Amino acid sequence: MPTIRGTFDVIITPETLSDTAAQSGLGRLSLGKRYHGALDASARGEMLSARASVAGSAGYVALERVEGTLDGRHGSFYLQHSGTMTRGAPALSVTVVPDTGTEQLQGLSGSLAIRIEEGKHYYAFTYEIADTP
Image (tube, rainbow, N blue to C red; front, side, top):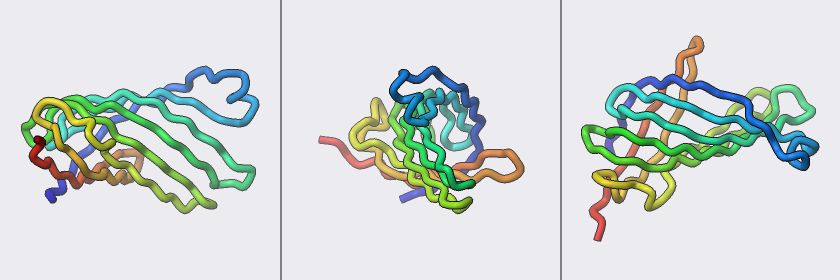
C-alpha cells in the first residue's frame, strides 16, 4: 500500500449546538480543508468535541467529505476521525469510511496520519484502491 505525504490548510469555525448538547459541555465546529501534494483536494466536515475537567484531556469525533484527486485519480470519499487527548498525550485515528469512494476512487480504503509542527499541518495517507465488482 502506498503512502503519500503533503500538507493541508484548515479553517475551523465554531457552530451552534442544540440546547441539550450545549448544556452537556459539547462543542461543535465546522471544518474547511485544502490538501496539497499527491492528495490535491478540498474537504468540508463537522466535528463534535468534549473537554474534561482535567487540563489537557479531551476528545473529538469528526466526518469530512474529501473531493479532488489522489495520485491523479479523481473522485470523493469520507474520512472518519476519532481523537483523544489524555493529559496532553494525543491519540488519533483517521480512516476512510468503507465504500464511500466515488468515480476513480471506488474501492478506496486507508488511513491518514496528521502531524502539526510550528502551526503547519502535515498528512501521511496510506491507502489502497481495490478492484470493485
